[in-house]
Length: 613
Image 1: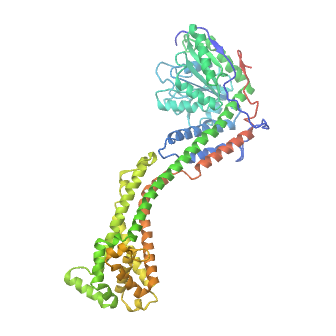
Image 2: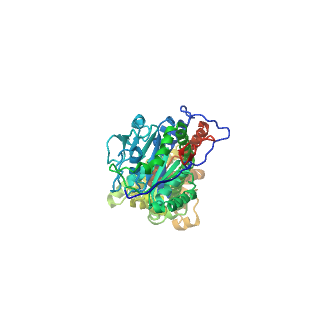
Image 3: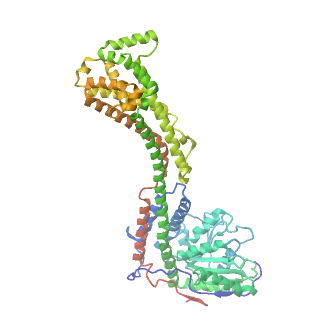
């Protein structure tokens, strides 16, 4: 270290947020059993936080995931173990910027070289916890900071906690030398923040050259918002600038509502052969901690104040998580609606195609006119001989019977329509998702087009529908002499006429467009069907066949839409995730007030120039 002069100290009450409970709140220890207890409510909150995910790429998702991890860590690392043992040793986490001298300060306070200090950065690669030998069992058993592996040797693993005992450190007090809060190593910065959230008291160490840096102040504001007890050390202050720098830092603390935080100013000085600061330099700070360690009531006040502040801060933090969960659900719903709207449009296009006569054009119209115009329809309805004649004609000419060609034309026309609407729907859904940040993150190029096997599934669906129409004719004509006296081939011909009826209109009443397009052929089909089944039966046949077709189309398109919807289903939080978080936070808040931690008058003792009274 460089040369220092005399030390200066400004002592005050630890910086805490003033929090009180209800007027009738009584001082009593926290409950430790039952679902309504504070530990039980915290356990429920932890489960609710752990069960809520934020997978959709929304602006709030990254911070929600980070905050959820931080809250879970604080529950595991500090709140639950501390509530279980309010009388456990007071943990002072020493944090600060790179090169601020944290390790040197800790070594000097415990009068032993327990934490490595040097010029290489970052020096503290894994956290070091030093305590009195009589307190070692509490920290060794791992209730506090359970995610860190205990070790008695220095380690390069940032997830290891190096435990050291120092007889010179009073019992009831422990120091944890944390990694740099502005370390160049991401894992070190994250661990430093996690450790600070597990502190009963935060000791921030900064220097005359670094005290105005942004990172420490961000963490200090976070500590203030959580009601944590804070003390400040301003290290390496040139003697000639002590008053000026200390006054400026005091002003900055006051501006951030941290004016009550004890401030210890350490001058520039040499370190001895063990790397320790002269005792005179650290005397005021060491005495402050010694008095705190020796006063059980003062330690309890610090613990209760920090604990209550951390508990009180849970509610707004969880509310933010709940809002983020609501945004996830709303985004998933919005993405789903874009997909459903696209495929509803496809269904409407098919339905309109069955109503406006467009399916009676082209090949279907030509084959129907041939089927009716040549008398094939009427001949096949008259006798069983029609089936044999068709076979002979097909064998001689090499051409399928008109009925087969008509059935194939109907299938081809429907499949072409389905492929077209499925392509449009896929493109529309893809475009809608691409315009949304969460949707764009879920897309892959194949979704811009229908499934590769859609044509095969569409063909199979149409054939199944055609078979369904034939079965419908058989069922509807079950009490008609027609069925009894005609062959299956006649049923097939009738079924084709029903399919044409479906293509014409809902109730099989041809519109002007249909008559013009079909050259009156729909009227011919209607007359034939009416003669066999009757006018009302014709309407019923056409309506049922049409409904069946639309149901099958809907099933086909739903399967296409599921390619999108399955992605949001995997990412969707539970419908009540946000409300569940709010309920869990409300139970914690209620249990907090009942516990007495937030009762009025529960503040740490004040400090004067001589330290804690």
